[in-house]
Length: 329
Image (cartoon, rainbow, N blue to C red; front, top):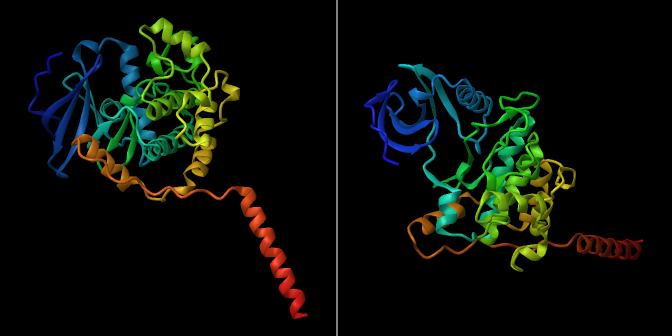
């Protein structure tokens, strides 16, 4: 698809480049001279002005983003009509989408997967507590900036709880990353987002999609019937992480981890042997992947002390303290 002809300005912003085109319009990289910063403007096509459902979808993205204020979610700056076109200005993420990363490095290091997953789950906790459901999580809608920060974007088909802009029974989302309930045309919930993120986690760890086939029908059938187990992962992946992702990919929503916060707590335990600050290591790793340089040394992953070992150790200390106390009496 050829690039759209660039206008000189959109609003007060100087247009630099067209960085994306979709069914609803173009995405422009622009410069804000008043604050001397780059930003992105999504602009709806003039030809779509009469399509109320698409305008509602565009408006919905604005409402969703405006309600969010989180470091792992793209920030919205402004929204206006200009010459019959709707414009949405938002934060420019100077980085790569997870899709670009996986195209370059199909299997990511376990610590890097955990770091990206941590950012996504933090974003989902924020989204879900505000009664929104993303409904279209996929590698193309997740960005990692060159400072190592993970960002969730593209809320164009997000749903507010108890409010729908789509016709019931309509399949919404990207086919390969849908949950079983979405494939069946049912309403998506917070647990649907968890399933989609489980697919993404599996793909980051193994280099392959757990359900994708050569057509949508076969892929959808796999999403509905193919079960994922620990045996589908390589042995270098921690068993706790494998177990978490298998629970995220449970076919029945009731059998999944009950919330994004629950997933986050399990991931917190899994990552307890890693350094607390992982943005710099992820930034260095991404830079090496992007420039095809030798990969940096991974962050040291200390082995966790098993809970039983802690109990035994505490009991041992108690016995020793008891003997010392008796000896002093």
